[in-house]
Length: 119
Image 1 (cartoon, rainbow, N blue to C red):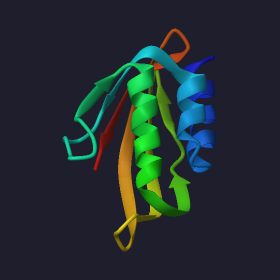
Image 2: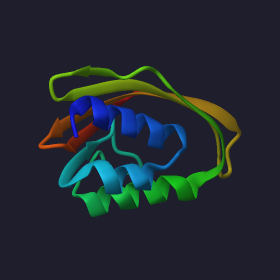
Image 3: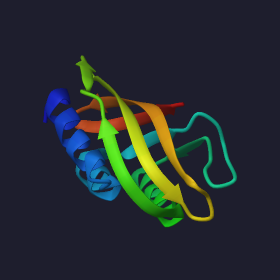
Image 4: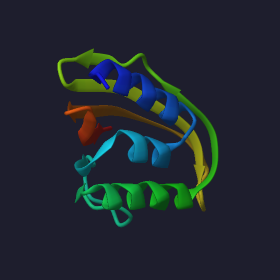
């Protein structure tokens, strides 16, 4: 797949909240995931598809209700993808809130090799 095709598939999965499907279909086995900072729930960095998949499942387990997801048109250049992800979500034990982050991905050999999130 080209970087643009990966971007299009990634957006489709993310709009549906299908993080696991995106990981399975689009990510390299040795992909890297970088958060803005470490939290009690998530390390700043995890490496490997299994660790990234677990992180997605852990996030889903924290969600009481996902009310909506909006994604900006992805910017694609060379081997990079970037878009803004906005979520309207109620996390367990917390009030409903809107989360917004810039998501940046690196692609190599037809797979996502890195993701990094900025808030």
